[in-house]
Image 1 (cartoon, one colour):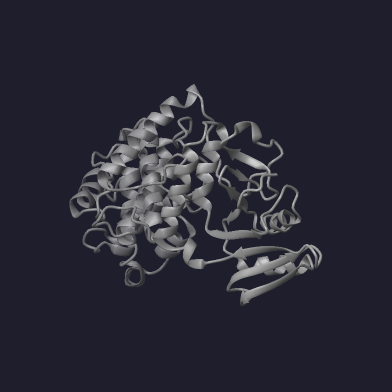
Image 2 (image 1 turned 90 degrees about the vertical axis):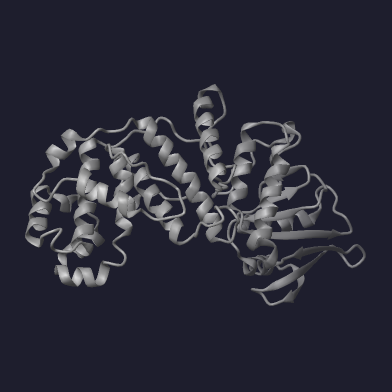
Length: 398
């Protein structure tokens, strides 16, 4: 085992667990601070003639705010200079998951098979942490996952449970890489900065059936109309007939069913200020089935112009039916939808980073209000490419 300095990185913030581990080990240690908010722990090993000390340091300011984002970006840049290998992509992606860090100092310096490494390993296992050293990233037991010397990688090394799945490298991913590069180029021009380690898009996924897409779109249309449209634009009896005739309840979520089961006046009083987000969902779905206006990432929510064109020119009137609407819809190619989904997925990643304090979105972009529009449009794109998944179970992780 190398005798390099070691820092621990994990996903979950849990300084108290370190104390619990040391108590279970019956270790000799003293704490500076409280069990849940300490700044240093000094562990003593060895006999009185040959005492060794392991200092474990903890600073919450280190792993919060923009400084942490900069630190992780620096770590990615550091490992990006190491030799190319499949494990490199996993390490770069893993850094996006880190949220907790501990430093370690050995006095005197540690040697190979030093007992203090055993203490570090037990703590790392409990935290599901990795070791970061100047030459490598190691698993919780100090086995090399990836480093500057590829021959030192240990096939027995275990990745943390939260390690993202990354696509294997090879000629088969050339098209996916080109798509990612195109998306990142467009997003950078707009002012978005998604994480470089995001996985490549899956170009083999399939698009839902056109009728299913149209039915969900019409269901959202009905939900929005019930809770927000004036009766003069959507007569209650006509709207109820539209829902029943096209079996739209089957395409609604439980919360949407609860909304339309309320008396209309009550539903509008409760939901007219929030149901507008359904328009963002609708825009992406409408585009997939042929609506001309392309969903954008501008620093704004859906415009009145797009709303009017979608609701009154593109979607069926209240006497319309699903069969006719689906028959006349011009479904976009799966490749077009995959590109848009990946674009919004990457933008959503930048939005999430901005919501946590990162400088990853355009200057005039509100991470909450405008970020919500990105979230909702992305929801529809991702759902459209996940046949069999319920709307509320759509994977919107970034």
